[in-house]
Structures are given as C-alpha cells and as structure tokens.
Image 1 (tube, helix red, strand yellow):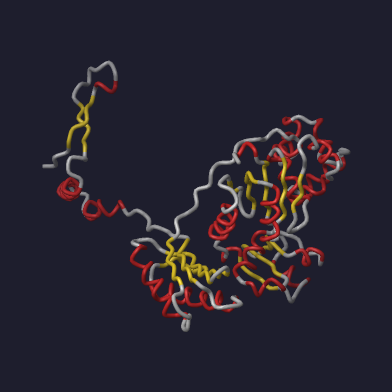
Image 2 (cartoon, helix red, strand yellow; image 1 turned 30 degrees about the vertical axis):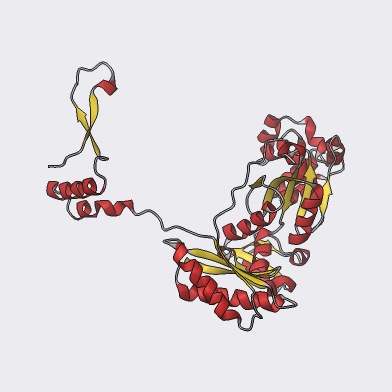
Length: 380
C-alpha cells in the first residue's frame, strides 16, 4: 500500500520519562516513580497524580506526599536511544515515520498495525484522516488501546471532546480556566475563533487553532533507520555455554567499529531480545563485554527452551567529533609569520592543490567579483 492509501496514526507514550526509566529498569514497573530535573518533578506515575503530586513540585514536597516513591533523574535517560528503539519497532510495520519529540510519533499505517504497536508499548494511539484529529484521538484513547476517527466524523468527534482533555497536550491550567470563563467547553467550540484571536488571548493559541481544525495532511517522510552492526550464530549442536559464543560474536564486531563508539547492546536469543544501555558510549572491549554478557544471560533466562540462534547487535553508534583545529596547532603556538607559514606548508602537503588564496588585482573593477581572483597557495 502507498502512503496515500493509509491513515495518519499517532502513537503517544504519556509521561515518556517514566516510561523510559521503566524500560531501562524493568524492576520499576511495579513501583511508583518520580522523575526530576533541577530539583523539580517533570514526570510521574498516575497513582502519584491521584495522591496530589503535580509536575513542577519540588522533590522534597513530592516525597513528603509519597515517601516510598522511587526517584530517578531525567538526565539519566538516553532519550535518543529509547526513541530510536520505538522507531525501529514501528519501522517493521511502515517506512513512513516521523518523531515529534519525546514519546510522540506520527506514521502512515493500517489500524490493526497501530493497534498492535499500542498494545506492545502500552501507548495511547489515534488514527484519522489528518494529523490533528489523530493526535486528539491519541489523547483521548486509553493506555494500550487505539481510538479511530472515521473520515467525515472529525467535527462530531470534536463536539464530544472536552477542552479539559487538552491538559494532556500540556495546555496550561490558566489557559484552560480562561477558556472556561469565556464559555468554551469542547474542542469544536473553538472553531468560531480565528487564529489571530486565539494567539492574542492565549500563549498556546497556535496549537489550539491547529487542534480545532482538521486540515493538516502534510506527508509523513520516509524513515531512515540508523546503522547497527550485527553478528549471528546458528546452532549446529547443543548450546552448552553461552559466554564463548557471545565472545566470538563480539570479537567479530569490534574490528568493524573503526573509530565509532557503542551506546546500546542487544542480544537476541530466538524470539527474545534483551538490551543494555551504556552510561557513556565506548569502544573498549571490557565495558562492552560486561553489557553483552548481562544482556545475553537475561535473554537466555527469558527463553523457555534453548534457542536455535543467537544475534548480537551494537547500536547507537557515535563517531568522534571532527578535530580540524588540530591542523592549525603549530600556528596557535606561534602567531608570528614563520609559524603561520609552517602551518600552511603542512596543510599544502596534506591537501596538495586544494588550498587557494585570494589575489586582489583590480581596484578599479566595476563589479566586486572582477576585483579579485583565486589562485593556488604556495607559501614562501
């Protein structure tokens, strides 16, 4: 099917920092969790909201209301890698994918595919013929479920959608209260306001204008999956020891890294996968082996029977930053003419014929580009 034949789907992972930490530490799945940044709560579980805690509370105030809650730092989340994991899972269903920020994805796909993804990640999902309606449907959906709005029912859907639901879209309580005072109660009631009127009265005016209309059908771009290095082992005999096989797979991949560093390790044992995120990207065999070994044992423990094959993938590959300034290191040590000449000679030796200099030769030229020319550089 082409992208034009598919509906717009939105996958929303509410409280993404909490979701990401539970993904990193499965033991937190049954615990109440606070995620803080700069001493303030930025994300929390629904049960803690019911206890009266809100985003923006100080860490001390939140813990006073829920002393047994676990606390994690938002800075400890490898957000890009977690988003990449979700994108790669969605990419198995469709090539049309777009990330809209932490925990929010737009895709073109069929209803049953989006329903499977929502159940897999425990996400809220919405499906419609335009972007804004699909987003509203995702806000209104239950966790792990899909809400679909049929074409031609966009206005009816907005008539039944209370404005209070937009608090999930980070609409401020002040704006919601102001709209209530003005007599607006549903999303459809905003249709009578122009973009200029909404922008003049509310800081979220542009977003509200977009949500109240169903005109946004911008195409979803094709997703380019990031590079991963993979090595596989197929069972020829009974798998007696796991670690020799994992060491062999890692030994095959290390020479292929080059100058790149690894941020994520994935071990697949049959249909079971286990991941480990490194605290800092590395290409050193020691830290990589520790992560591979733990992920391998975790995957094998989750298998009901001995797997027929093992796969090791190194992902989140990072290349070292460019260090072009080192070419001019001699000139930095000495800014005298002889120091600059030595630096230019070294550059000329490394890049023969590619260094040019500007020669100003015609001050009377009518056009500026006729007053100078580019010549090959031959430092003397």
